[in-house]
Length: 325
Image 1 (cartoon, rainbow, N blue to C red):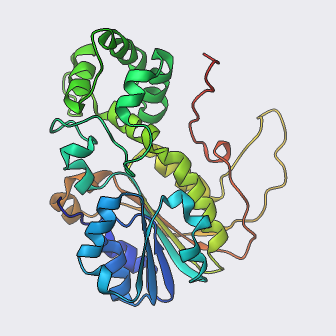
Image 2: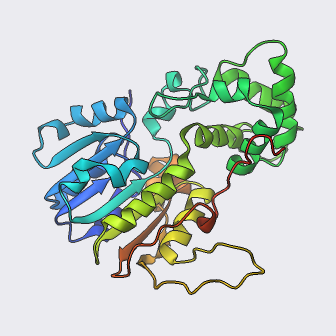
């Protein structure tokens, strides 16, 4: 398995400076961010990852020997329920590096990418329903909804129809099969560099791992855990994630009907840092083209009490309940 170099790591450390106390790395990956935080002065780092392969790789790179590092195999949506985090409170800072890692993308056996053919899996934790289960078991309406809401694919209905027609001849079991099916179901697009299957693969990955729901749960937990002055750093890679983070740290959390007056809003729970957001520099993009879509947002916790923010308040797309069409 290839390693994974965290995106915008120097920027994370710059924003975190001075690095002191306990930090939580909610998306451990190969452990690059955790090691950097320890090297910068963190007294302890708790590293969380639901992928057992990533956790083992991080430990093999030297973190296993560090007395200042605590590994936890869990989803970052479980952040608020982890005894390993509670036992080292107060928390000085929490980092989220969202999305799929290079080591997951580059391993065809994990089924995240169509660049090399592999099983249609996409499960970060290796548990639960796979992408193949969704593609081969869900209705045409549900598949179209997933592609549209989570992938922003405007041809979602056409692609979903093609999936159902293909299923009549047998199941779809590999990434190559699905990518070819998507490409063949769409009209030619001149001058478009993006592979026609990219948005649908993103949508399936988000659905398989409930990534947006995990993000909301993790952010709410971070708000409860961070004391005044605690720092929250989030790196996202597509607009759905970034919109959620922007609303969360910017205080633009709305709910209810537009015809009903808003209730009195509490004061801001975070003070934005880093000028709102930052992207990777030219050198990072040249070294790692996958980093070009990264957007980092950071904020400092105020002394306002934590307030739970639901999916609706943060603008998270929600699949319709089954039976509602």
